[in-house]
Image (tube, rainbow, N blue to C red; front, side):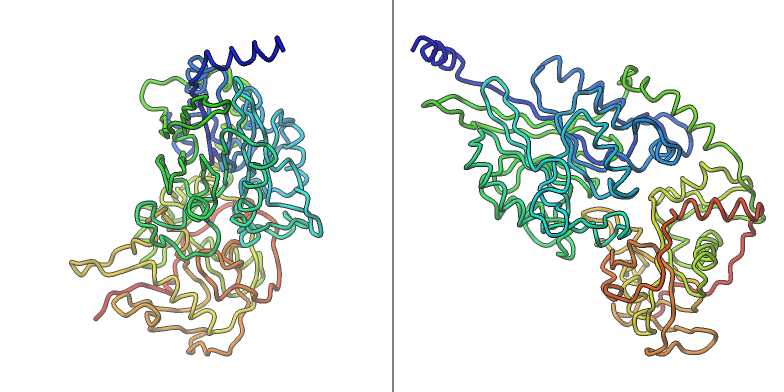
Length: 537
């Protein structure tokens, strides 16, 4: 009785408490505040966010710290660590040192296969939260645990972790063999009420490596509703969620959707999400009074946390030396000055990439995309830094058997990237800019000849399509090499889904390019101008 009385007294004397949640997402191996293309210091990276974490911990030592996925892949440091077998992945070493409470696997965690991922998870001093991924034929989580419970001064917090189930549409099948990715929305609908009933938490958090499929203000569809992103539906259709952490889209979001506090902290350490939840103790239980979400950015004079960076300093220095090693040279100009310009007419760099793909796959037709807007192309001397600056994702290749009809449909999809502005000029379709930039979903082809006329209505913009000098018939079958993301239909290329896969090439595109350059030593800037985009009434 005395113990009960003391417990009751403690709870009545402290009737209000604010808990703090900090969340990172899509760090992509960026620990150092470094632009790896130029070596300039920039305001990003986990090192700088660590300084924010330290200050927030000074104010609230009992805060909850989570990462929302895509942590081990993306930066040259992360690539070097994987390729050269670092004892502990530097990103995991940093999360361990910072005392993370839990991490959700992102889609890029699977890029290197299950064996490296298993070691990474074993090296982690925190749990991996994954409710919607099971082994084939099992209902139990394939790895990690579905959720965690943390007590903060008598307040019970539950965190459910889920990953977009769209991973099999992009990933090399060998990297996810034996895994089943369950519909994420259905998983959240199953687990949130279960956790509410069994654990009775005071605060229910869902950490979702996925984004928003609808406009947050109007609820109107902001993208094709494929299931890749289901954040809005979680807020609208699932009762009992207090906070939803999102990611994957690399957006900077903080606010509320249908009464659920939401956060999405960009990418590469641009920001860290902070959610403050104020609770009051009434009638023997804690009740949420108010919630507030904000983004904390590592701007200006903020110094990176040296203790965290020191953990991987020697590996970072080796990475920088490795990046600066010359591997070949160019003859002619292969620099990229205008991303838009290279999408209007063939550029020597794009033709080079397609020819590397065709040689490796042993086919005569290829398509590729410019992966990001800062791709520099190649200067006279080519280093590994140049290769990784152009090929930022570990894409693998696949060869599909397609008909002429499929190829025409794919070109029509590509042509949707452009639209005609109010002044009559050619512009990028806003659909490819919001809610996130998707320039990588514009493909450029080699081995066929074609002209796209953007002045025509969508669906009828392919005004010329030839193969070996003759009109490409709908029934003619061709083997085409492309990256595995596109081969799975990624980017709304539905005409590729379910097509016969003739061959899969497991090596990363960056490795293939480096190997090709190393073998030839000098590559020529060639361009046969087999395609162009026009704007003709």
